[in-house]
View: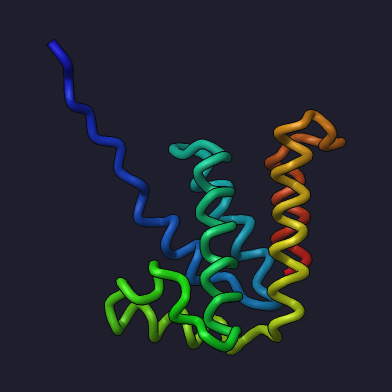
Length: 126
């Protein structure tokens, strides 16, 4: 007697991810808080980490090593390439590392503030 339930990701999350660029923190925080109305912080964090991982892969030689990039539609990859061009590779790695430390701190109980506040600060510093 299993029930199938669908849990769709809100479309606004893609606006949020596409809006990641230097100096866009205020807009990102607004979208982040709208997302929190219907999505768990963990899902948003996962999608943030994924976006930065993909941008790092695109900024690296041999970017085809990530299977996810090879499965993207050309328009998706084009949008991601344009977004990636707004960052330097070392900047992407630094931001990815910060996300990793936030996630680790949350999971180990060592984060000194609620995760939502930590993400707010992270978004302002992009």
